[in-house]
Image (cartoon, rainbow, N blue to C red):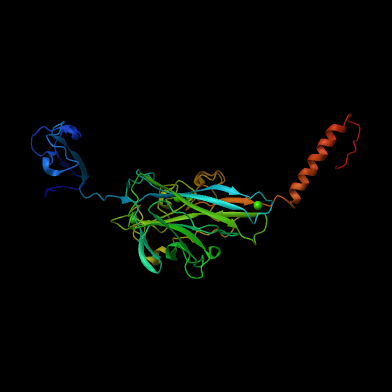
Length: 372
Ligand SMILES: [Ca+2]
Ligand SMILES: [Ca+2]
Ligand SMILES: [Ca+2]
Ligand SMILES: [Ca+2]
């Protein structure tokens, strides 16, 4: 950079020299080139002895940056949750019913917030795993009221399934997570949150433009649950932006990445310096920001809902504009198919209607009918 450069002056840096930064051209040796060199014939495979059939190639690339501009780099990550299966086990009781949820993690490559953010990869944040503080990307799903984890989840390649038995009042990012198999006296029924973390020796980050699928969670209805049972839950994502270490926190149920509000402003508390981009935060600053991810009132979820089961909670016509902060719960009601006074009434009414239709011949005649 030259000493006289002023704010907003544009600095251009070019590596290589081709017309219009064209790629993979036959080299024109005119100085400043970035070009290929044939390996010696003695190099062994995959070297093929002799000169390359397409000659020497060259390419170039140019980048521009404004002097004194702050590069707004941040990770825009969206956690998506759908209810992928419901199995009533072919019985009228609900206590053998199972629900399956599919979670996926999408790291945006373009900025949907309108804030001029340059999207960054997603990397881990500090969590406790098997009693050791480690850096991991964490996908967490609190076990909703009336259910328990049915099976140990099978993670997608490069990821590990994890669980915690800590009280739900400890937020997911502060909980003591454990890898499966179950440790000590732990049971599936005692798990309060299930989740997934990256296996740090395989996956170190999720690049912009990438969606990781295959986070599957299967729940079963507790033996003690009563019909009807409304199951409402929300999943949460925790990570960081590389370099700035800005905190990344998202909840499922909408298309908003990193819990950005529908108007493109950061989630409350995430941007202490007020530049429109979430910041690196201490555990003390995180505490009031992060929700426990547990739905206290499943019949009327305090988070709002995603009624389409397709992560469009922000555009739910039932939502009040401006109240769609954070995620929206996936909600599903199951009920026993027998001993339902409401349904019995419906059946009786239907039978009366049929009998009425077949016995009425005149508008003045009062038909008599009875239930068969
Ligand atoms: Ca059943
Ligand atoms: Ca979201
Ligand atoms: Ca900020
Ligand atoms: Ca929302």
